[in-house]
Image (cartoon, rainbow, N blue to C red; front, side, top):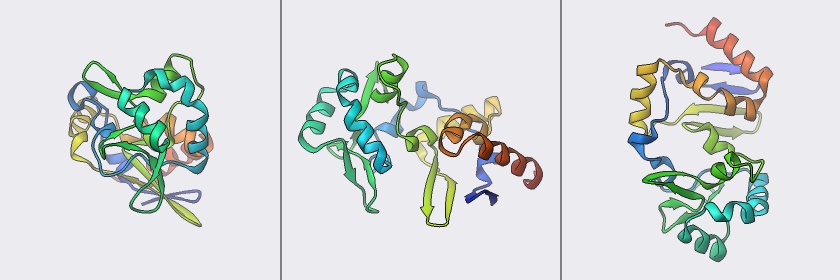
Length: 189
């Protein structure tokens, strides 16, 4: 384990090679699973506010589910998460051909909103757990991401480099630079 400020970081972040391969996985992380993506309380407010601008990117089923039950739900741990359609697709799902993508991110890329997507989605396959005094930063292994592991090995892209932008978004530039120092000085091959 690595320690960076108040975060305990799994060394997997250095050793796991990872690069999303949407042509192979088809965006399964937005479709599979037993709960929606974890949300911060503030993100629920943001999603409600952005909804009118994101709505054109949503599926009809997503719109119906949001209008009926809202943008968020409570998962099995008692935490906030994105709502699911019939226990499967995220309500913020958008299709680009046969590839599932994030409607929020598509609106962001088109300049319609200034919020890219929930931080848990941006950081995936890293998951953050808050334990009061410290934060755990761990790799979440999932079969649907096997193509990303293959692609990551091919291009030799460690997880911490692939996720540089979301790690900086979540923890800040100084934290990320400290992470680099920890990886270079305290991880042995």
